[in-house]
Length: 294
Length: 261
Image (cartoon, rainbow over all chains, first blue to last red; front, side, top):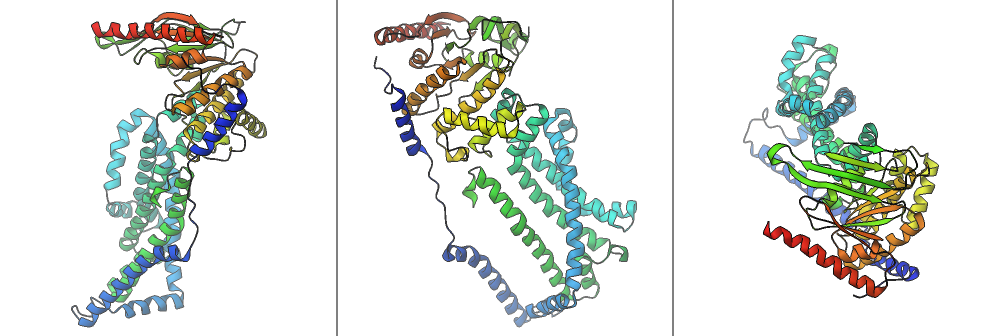
């Protein structure tokens, strides 16, 4: 029987250093170049230009009457007018700050709820299916009930936003926790982690990617729930948000305003995704070596 | 019935007396371990050898406190044995150094001390200077060394009251390539000599068991029982070859006995 190949301490160290150098995964760090930036920006810009061109062509061909399909320029006019008078900012602020507040409350409620549903078997059996069901219930269905309970007040708006966001956030966390490799909590146990310590240092960070996906969806649901609530529940007490702005356009049969409102609603959605969630998701996945998606 | 902690002066790092473990209940119950008696002296390196399904991992889980024996007694001299698994099982969001620190954090060690201790342990497994790397930036062998440093962090912590610490290893090198495995076996021996930790090492590789252990314990399969033991510490090369041959023969006998059943 041959002796082990590596015997004395010094040669072990040398061989080991060599192995480390050979085996370490090499990571390609991609540097910023204008060409790569252009490759990212060009396709969506091109798509938008194409869309507007088709729109312009349809309008020029006069397929539909002007009050159904206004010119792109008319919509642009409405937007610039509202920006100049400052109405656009008021309307945006009104809606966005409500959505952010509602979403923050949704996070505060949805996170512990998700943790309990994921870790306490009887709670999961009891309300797990309900929570999944609520996720598919359009939260606009809550508006009539909320109006009867709270009147046309901010409470109604926040209630609807919460019903939209909480199930998504909680379900995201549950999915994130379910996908944790079972070995990690076991490691926590053998390292002597308490239940709380394990939740804080192992379960929550391990579930972060799933939780983040839930947050993202929770925000999307918050935003559309808010728009639904604002369109249906209009009152001076609520101030004018984007939804009310849209509804006002409809009442006046002012198609350029309607399209401008839709455009602004979309803009907020895309803006939050690109400025908040995309970078957050990216840094979380990168840190774990899961950067394949980007 | 239970795993107890004896605070009186003990001459063993761990002692198992008549340990039974069965899974399930009634007719469908499967007996994984049946009357296992085993003890590991402080600072001793014991290899637990057996084919798959012999309950090696079950036994280790019982000692680690991840599971409870159905019957029998497990007496540990340390409050918490350190455990190393087949996979490194590092937290992928933490750097190597933070992974080691995690063990110390759960033990309530303060931050500056944690840093210092983690640095020392990474130095011990020859990963000094790589503390800022994340698991996905390290090779399989390096990850397993971080896991060793983490295990040592919890083991040494467990022995602060002066009682001998115990390191449990569940086939920690079986997922590595042959060269890396060979190097890490050497590293483990070096670390073991410099830390005085008792080691209970589970493996299905006879050569590995003989190379590493002072004593090799052969377990039978379904149910697991201790079949035989060999003293293999400080053997001459020729004696070592003979021991490997002999243990291999016994292992084959144990395995072939299942074909008839």
